[in-house]
Amino acid sequence: MATIRQFGPVSLLRSEASNHVIRYRSGRRVASDRGLVFWFLPGWASVAEIPLDDRETTLFVRGRSRDFQDVAVQGTVMWHISDPERLAERVDFTIDLKGGSYQDVPIEKIEVRLTGLAEQAAMQYLAEAPVHNLLDAGVAPLQDRVEKALVGAPALADIGIAVVAVRLGKLAPSKDLERALQTPTFEVLQQKADEAVFERRALAVEKERAIAENELANRTELAKREKQLILEESDNAREKAKAKAEAGEIAADAEAARIRTVEGARAETERERIAIYSELPAQVLLGLAARDFAGKMKAIEHLNVTPDLLATALGAFKAAPAHAAKAE
Image (tube, rainbow, N blue to C red; front, side, top):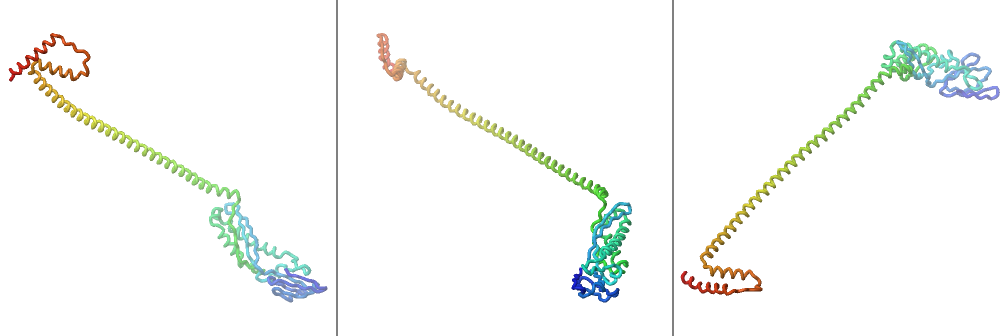
């Protein structure tokens, strides 16, 4: 806003470069430009100050679709004053020459006109299609419709207003409608989530079954190998027993053959000895027996020799030479 200072009956006005100032004296325009600085007499002057910077006006539109569903959209309209002198003729931008504030609300009046045009275009667009089509199309077609309705609109150009751009947010249905629209999607998503859970569980069960089958196969294979090992060990034990038995039989046969050989040799020696003894006279045999008997005895404590025994022995010794001579 312009800065106004009073110096007695005269005042000094200083405006910013972004503001267009129009000075009137006695109802006639005497100066019109940006950032004016001038002295004036408050009782004889009138001043209008028009901002030339870009401005943004909030836009909120609530309309109904063709199927009578409430839809809302929010956004902003960017605009500026393109012809300040023409706008000053249509809208009151007169400022108070004491404080520099507006005597009216010119910016609010312009915003009301802007939002009215934008709401009209938006509501017409919303009423042309059912809510599903509107939501599927998104906000871009609606934004184009509103922008075309505002940019170059005769109602704005006639008063010196130019719309720069229109930015709209997403289309928003009512809360009840939004919940109703979300329900099928939510159900589908929930169903997919449940299917994913079921698939994970089925996969886990399948993996557990595969693990169990693998463990069972391993145990079966291990049992087969243990059985084969037992059979092989049994066969080895039988082979060892058979070999040991055969070795024992061979050893027994060898021992028996050795015994037979030794005993045969002893028997043969005994037969030969007996044959030799059979040809000897009784006196010789008696002497040999006495010798053997004496050799086996360690000591003789008592010896009784009777006359009969002595006579018999002497007779035998006497007869022995005779027999020996006869044998020769």
